[in-house]
Image (cartoon, rainbow, N blue to C red):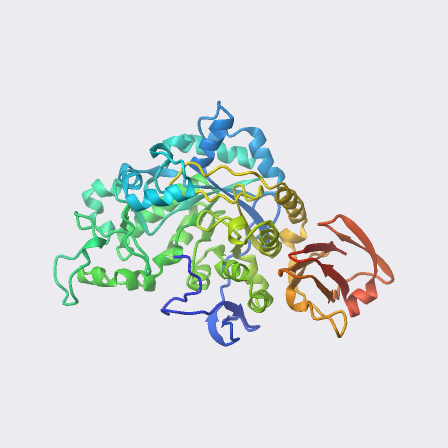
Length: 547
């Protein structure tokens, strides 16, 4: 599902998105060929988020709720629910300049999925790979097979969540919870309600002349399992029917339940609800059962209705296949930028530089950037160690937009937490990575990284004989009060470049401070404007200058 190299409607595509000055986006392949696509443009004005900024930049901290509570209980015996998270734990998160906490997987789950997760052989093999000493009790069920939108009793229910939200707010942090729109748990509350029978996609009772209905896609009662265009059945789920207007109303009511508990919601696989996607996956069954494609998109109607009652609600979409622009137009504030992540993993500097420098500022402001989350491998593992992982983090988080950081990322954890488990394998914190994130998060507290403007800076070779500019990406973040230059050498060799800074103030020598090292320099302002600031970086080096 997370293959962003695939574009919607194409079986195979190596395109990655960049944007033209007229607002269109283009795909850039390794060969440099381009194709026109639509760039996302958020329809709503940027919202104030957390204690510091607007949509220009803010930090979101993701933590798996049930696994976190289990971890806390081991260290703090008095912790029973999320209402009891110790002050020092919340203070530590707030002190890292976090604007919002995403408490992932907080809603009520059922027995069907839990039993499946504990008994299915291939799943147990996957758990053993992630956690060699796992036991049956460690398996807690998928957080994406929801029974109903009430907070799990394991976490203390809705009342405990409201207390947790208030305690976050007291520290200037907002709260995000999940919404999983495509499907519900097999044993969800609607499964036992006759009036909700048509809330689900169902196996038709008649032959449509196109061959047999695939038996593995349906439950014994005729409901279809959830899926997406590129996967088989998700056996712990039942697929919802978004061609049914009554289901749409019921899901808006669920959205409002979440909005009453949280300031924001992360919408799982949000693009699956687009009419064209829903029809592509389920059109055969839906049309055979007499359903017609709606004239309007669910998300446009739903987001409007939710905001009429909860006007400050922030919507973030998990989205792939180049469909982020469509979701932004329908009202989402932020959409996953999986293309940037894929370029960082690839390490192809021409593609990475082309992608970043051709982004519009509006695109970046409304994108979610990450180097790990609950779906992706740990950055320390995926990027081969702390040097490259931390350089990738600098690129992701020093750009405008939403900065998604995962629990224990700051400590350099290389052990992935399977979402079905309550714990991951033990790890030794990496002290260098911890120091690195202390510096990075302190830099991100500056107003330029919350409310500032962004401009890409093309690296120049310092002499005719040096050609290190290809190793580097760089940009400015600035307000009327402060100016920063971000420079990252995202290669395994040293680089020396000059970077022109047309807004360098004054004449003569001015003070330039580099924040990763803490060193200050005196540099000629006119030379910075004309020839450029000379910057020398080691492999995977990061420098952030204030001038």
